[in-house]
Amino acid sequence: MKAQLRFFGLTDAQDPGDRSLTPPSGAATVLGPGVTLKGELQGEGTLTVLGQFEGEIVLNGLLHVGPDARVDANITAPAIAIAGAVRGNLSADTRVDILPTGSLTGTVKSASFAAADGANMKGEIWVERPASVAPRPTP
Image 1 (tube, rainbow, N blue to C red):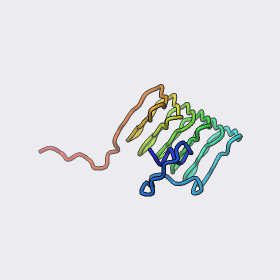
Image 2 (image 1 turned 30 degrees about the vertical axis):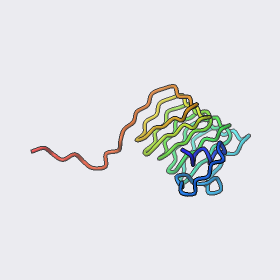
Image 3 (image 1 turned 180 degrees about the vertical axis):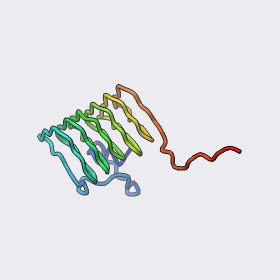
Image 4 (image 1 turned 90 degrees about the vertical axis):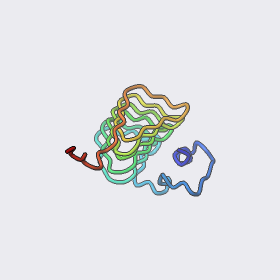
């Protein structure tokens, strides 16, 4: 969580051992502030949304929603970090994190969910662990 807060500039804390997020300079794609995009977005790698997006996002990478961003979309990605406002249904293989400035209205289906103090959430949360090993038959 500290790395996510630092990523969005919400804290000055530096933890050199925490490498859980790609720094902004390593972001593959950035939808900048002041930019509004409508449609379907599909791709690989990290996506950082700092502006506005409406539609559908299917990503094979991390999705970061910045503190001033507004997203109205159904989202499918391995991991999603929200510091702005998101409205839609989210599906994440590994985790969904809502940071202190973040808000989410919709449904979450993920292996892990966390909301920081101050975060807003309205909707349903489905936490399901991925089936890594098939169950053994009982004799």
